[in-house]
Length: 301
Length: 292
Image (cartoon, rainbow over all chains, first blue to last red; front, top):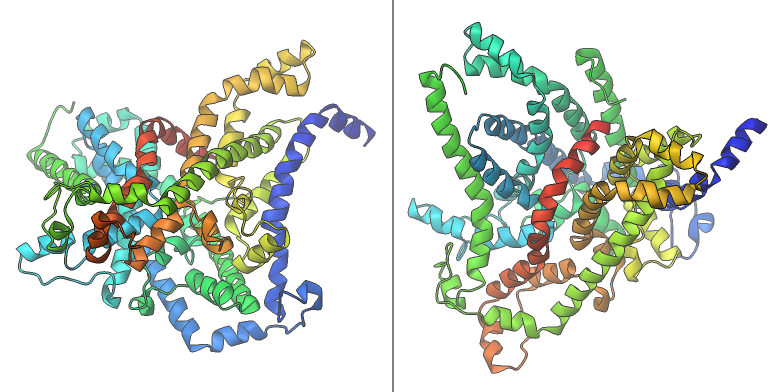
């Protein structure tokens, strides 16, 4: 014990250096986590944590009984599913296609351009989409007009808003998402392909039996993380596309929490909803992880 | 490259090049269209005549944006929080990442676990909002810099980098009798320029793009960063009539040209650093994903 203390004393600079960072996590991440107890209170700002009455699970009961909650949860799940089925495989496919390109300058040009949208803010992206999807002046509807298609009100029709939300996410991130897969692809031993060539396997067969298995561990890990984020479609990317006409399909947990909590000051109710979301996310991650460990041997921890 | 290019593969290759070109154009043309609109007359925009080249060339929107003091103030605030915020980000992240990379730091495993847990279980919004009010950060520019001072992902990127520095260098410094801080200053930091650049670029992009925290915690209009200002301009559609003859028709006729111009102005800094960005982010992504 004494030796250990002496050791720690010898490297005290390291400990001193780490204190601000540790305090940062405690204050800004763990204090709000403890503050989640207000989900079980009728919190009001003046009474504070100690003075507000405890109400047990009442806010959770209210939440599940509320007609709107089911609709909002439904929207969140549908967007999560669309994102998982369409947006998740997109960078994998794109990376496989890029991997077949032999002309370096072409590959590099494509990469430079498709990585770029990732660095634009959601506000800017919504502005770009509002501009290009406008029914009167947007170039997308102009182009549809060439084929005799009537202008589509992409941003105000409930049927179109989800494809726009998922599509704008793909537009922003599909290129950037290829980076991890491309790195995994370059680490494949080329001799494997040469051997397959000798055995007479064509390129398609090689992709199925060499390339895909080689990047499967990366896919699995990213898929597990995606499952953990299932209800986290993202506040900003939805909020910036919302208007009163598309709310029926676009209201998700995160945007509703903001409105109920910060605009209508229903602090405890909004916290209950946030806590519900975080707990479900954690449970999904744990379940997916143990399933994956049993099925493929891959796991996060 | 391949001895036998089968007919099927050759067809696939042609198809592949075409498909990739279409995908690339899908990323590029919307940006070009926005850019073309900012130089086209309101009438051309309204009748949908603008595709990828300016129609009826004008610089009126840029003139409007340049004379609007509230846009300039928002721009200045964004520059300020990007520069000062990124400085805070790097100092805070490095000072925790370095100790966590050293084997001499007893208990580093627990600290790391504490960090990683915050990545998979996020606290609800409301308690965070109450915290910002209680500690007096709400409605100050600090709320855009301090609560986002360390990103767990960037912390792990930096820690992995420090951990792979040759141990002998640090040991040799110790034999020479250099103090810990001296060693960090003269041995570790000079070697860490690449990771500082990578993480600094990640942070500065996210500081420039910050929107959510400003929306949650700032309601003083004088403190709005550019993204909030831009969002406001995108949803209201009414420009302020400045009484200036040149702009009064613009204010009533077509807000879209001005909206697109502010988008271009807000994107320019990102475009300006993109060449540097590209050199570093691939590396950063990879260090980070190895550890995840």
